[in-house]
Image (cartoon, rainbow, N blue to C red; front, side, top):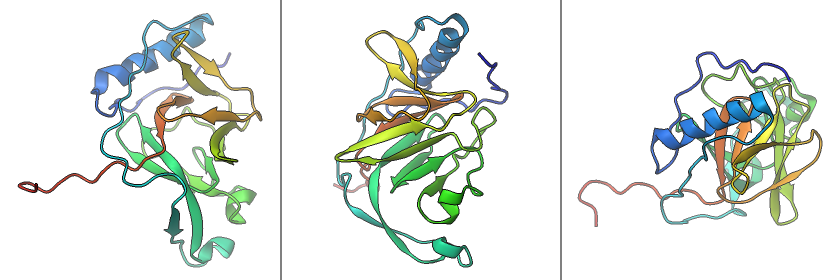
Amino acid sequence: MLVLRGEDESAAQAVGTGTGAMTAATDARTTTRGRGGAGDASPVHSQSGAQEERRGREVETPTRDGEDAMATTAHRQLLGLLTWDNGDVDELVGPTLLGRDVSLGSAVSSGELAPLVPRGQNDSMSRVHAELRASGSDVVVVDRASTNGTFIWDEGSKAWHRLVPGEPHVLRPGAILAFGERTATFSESVPAAPKAPGAT
């Protein structure tokens, strides 16, 4: 098993439960990989806000000029959200290629896959790490033979389950994933916008 590069790892900020829960998940993942057994802590996630918009709405995605097939405005299906360990939230708009540097991928330049490079410390992620896409009515994640692996937290065994490269894994709302040392929670709904002070 390769040693993961985790220097300068981002501070965890799990949604609705504070930083302690996601930090415990990261510690559990490190323990699991080192021993090959179950971790000693469970990540916690709670969804916040009313479900105002659900997967299936059409999103207009603007693109930058001069980028071949990506230079025109595309209409893609909103698959869900990834809420990262540093509190950032990324929309999954259509089939998405995730990694440290996916801009040179042929599937991205052709417009087949949308690029997603999380903000923050991504040294533990491969340049092309994983793909997220719709499969029927489900959303699946597929590891793209990444060096440090793609993991799903298994609440039943209190351990991280490493995905087999190339094999799709169905994501359920609330699923907690690890891409190398970066963790994120998948959700289908868009969190409700905060109310202005004094609003009823």
